[in-house]
Amino acid sequence: MSAKSLEQWLDWQLELHTKEIDLGLDRVSRVWQAMGAPAIADKVITVAGTNGKGSTVAFCEAIYHAAGYRVGCYTSPHLLRYNERIRLDHQLASDEQIVSAFEAIDQARGEIPLTYFEFGTLAALWLMAQSQMEIAILEVGLGGRLDAVNIIDADVVVITSIGLDHMDWLGDSIAKIGFEKAGVMRKGHPAVLAAKDLPPSVKAHADKVGAKTFMLGEQYHFEQIAGGWSWQGQNRTRRALPLPSMRGSVQLQNAAAALQVIELLEDTFPVDQNAAKSGLIDAKVFGRFDIYQHKARFVVDVGHNPEAVGHLASHLGDLFVPGKVHAVVGMLKDKSIAETLAVIAPRIEEWHLLDLSDNPRGATAERLAECLPAESQKQSYASAKDALDALDTELSSDDLVVVFGSFVTVGATLAWLGEMPT
Image (cartoon, rainbow, N blue to C red; front, side):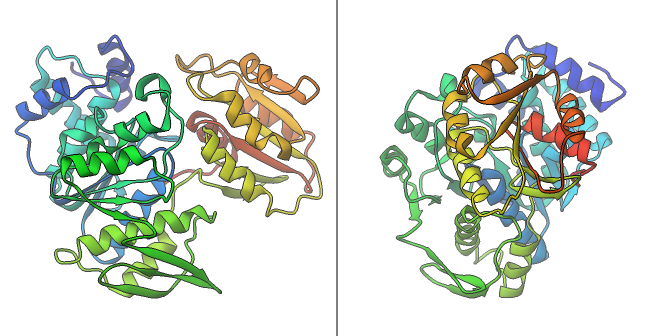
């Protein structure tokens, strides 16, 4: 494949494989070996889980960047630009860099079919290797055991909170999903278990493969105090830490996991207290309980499963809203739609439902409406822009608009608000 633009490459990749998602490591491993399988960094951190992955990656990246290290990050999906998926030394990869990586992948793969996600994963790994990163941080896209990211042996893994999501691929229970997430663990390497309520299948798999676990509440702890918080590991205590700039009490749990990773790699990449504090403040992920003031106040969150939207609903309870609370929501059809909407429904007065059926995985507005009480106030729209344009004519400064349900919905809203991730 020869293409002039990043957009052309991405369009072509969507047609290359018959499936959007094709879990398994054989094909992507063979291509990576054909590319020489270079070391992508001196140390590799892999983050798996259902919720909190992006924030944990962001904390690790920001802290190590503040400490002066060259950090590469791979995350997914993106909100507005594909380039958001690959960051090299705190900068988005350029179109030219990504295209050059795609060319190298295409040359190496021969007749092996790759998915859109597998192309992106290999591109991130290739660019990190070419850019001589000191630390690579990889976010698992789906599951862990069979995700393309898992072709790389991580020096440290993090398992964040686990909920019911991607059940068509990962299993219909927390135990099964936990097993899939735990598949990124390696013998003799540490695994940070970042939530107290992880299913027993996670620890069981760690014991089976011989990974050494560092569990929240056992090997490390954190405590919120007036104006800040403290963290304690087995060999170090960090006091008088600033609260993260990312909103939500759950962010302390994610930040604490990042500090445990940093302690585990302290011998190779030490981080002083000033860098830790700066990173906690600087870490940012768009679409995690972001608040914007437009005609009304907007809360924008990529939450798309019951656990994440439950946190969103809880945080909304801390906001004073003298006017009406609107929801703008669009979801993918493979999500637990009814359960997700139910946890936030008591907070919402009027629903604005988006039809995402132009996306192969997108749910229709009618499907969302079926999951809401018949008596609820709801309207349907063909796109986020249509919904926001219509809603804008009726909002007052006292109102609150809550946008959630998918990266697609949040990305379109950020574009409408004029907020661009960088």
